Amino acid sequence: MGASLLVVEDDEAISDFLAENLREDGHAVSLASCRREAAARLRRSRVDIVLVDIGLPDGSGLDLVRGIRGGEAGPVDIGVVVMSARAAEQDRIRAFERGVDDYIVKPFSYPELLLRLEALHTRLVGTLQGVLKVGPLEVDLAARQATMDGRVLRLPAKEYELLAVLARDPRRVHMKEDLMERIWGYRDRGTRTLDSHASRLRRRLVAVSDEAWVINNWSVGYSLRAVAQ
Image 1 (cartoon, rainbow, N blue to C red):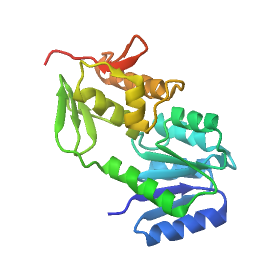
Image 2 (spheres, one colour; image 1 turned 90 degrees about the vertical axis):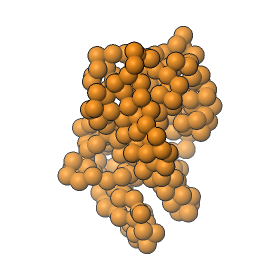
Image 3 (spheres, helix red, strand yellow; image 1 turned 180 degrees about the horizontal axis):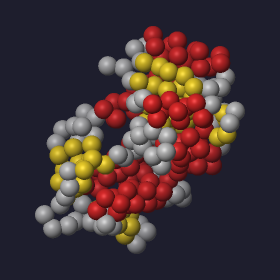
């Protein structure tokens, strides 16, 4: 089953190319040419993945990402993929710190883009089975959904993946290098990508439980607060 995609791109040739080809490959595609239009569409209807350019007529695409992850521009738990001509490491790091799931450099290979989108969609849909329970926290691996005392937590993909890894072995201190490799696919303690996601996840859990669930252990790794079962 194809994904529902919102392409946010002001270059008409690129957006038309993506719409035509992604639809031929079985995906539902809607288009927006600026940040404001995209935010309005996301508030009106649910999509699986947003594919957004950084350079938009009314501001940076990263501001749209911030709005999504902050809950101001649609559901926080949808997939977000940035596409940009900016290939510098710092640009990619900044995007991941804002909460994007993937970063595609222009000019891009369409087959690679398609595979990346479909891989992200597979992760969002979820293929693992089982429910992890840590006190009032439950992580349903099949549904890719977490709840606290029965209340559904709306989490972006990377924050959900971080929570799921921690919940599998809540008392273990998961080293930062291992978490980076498992969730982002590379080992690098020199960025604040993991710390930024962990901080946001901690705030979301505190907001619904008044407990500091995500523990930063001596700046070397993270664990999940193991409460009484």
